[in-house]
Image 1 (cartoon, rainbow, N blue to C red):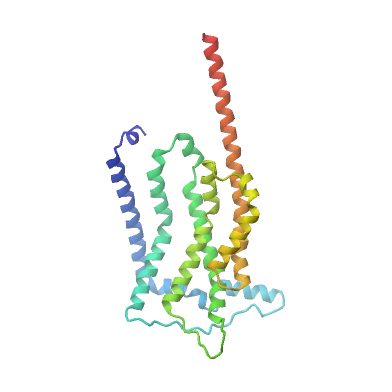
Image 2 (image 1 turned 30 degrees about the vertical axis):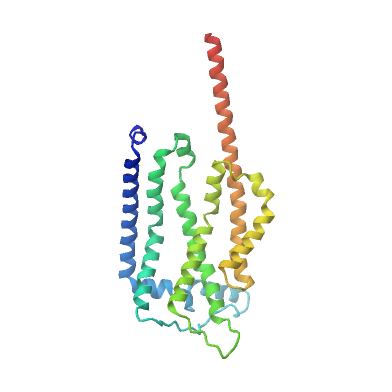
Length: 285
């Protein structure tokens, strides 16, 4: 710790450079793996939401059957993806490989960032932020799973089947499909970081439970606007996004309340310790 404090500005830049280099190496390695196993990743993972045997559609069908209806079952997709550019497929191959590389390497990237920031924190700050890497990674992966298995299938199903005229055929480009899928998955992953963002804001006194409860109605409007922006125009898909955001907001209130309670305990202990120290000094005098 003492060595970290004595490091010069140039030394810190050098250390940051190596953290960035190691993060980039991790991204490159996972990108290469994704590029090599393109058949599985592209046909099973990326194109999964447009296949009738996708887990979400199968589960929805089983739920419908248990309710005595087959109306929830999706048997086929009237969709043919197309490539309209000479280098379109290789560009998509490279871009989705990089995206998957970043997603898989995210825990390691955040861990490298945390290693760089941690020496600058006080001991108490390190203790109260222990587990940050785990929880950030946990919410990121939960958000990615929600985006991939819940948000993406319903959004893609709606968008590919929506028509304003039977004379207009939906010939979707592969780049449009992949960019939509990536936006939904990564957007969901970032949205699920709300409790962690609130936690750090609460630590510096910006987000308090009273403030969040006071502006709960405003947050509902903001959540509805966000869900309308990142999803198709159907109300069902918007609610699919809005509902977990409501839950995350309420969870964030509990997080802010927990941080406030812990900070009050710490402040009380410090006040008592300062009082005892002052009493001892008076007794010695």
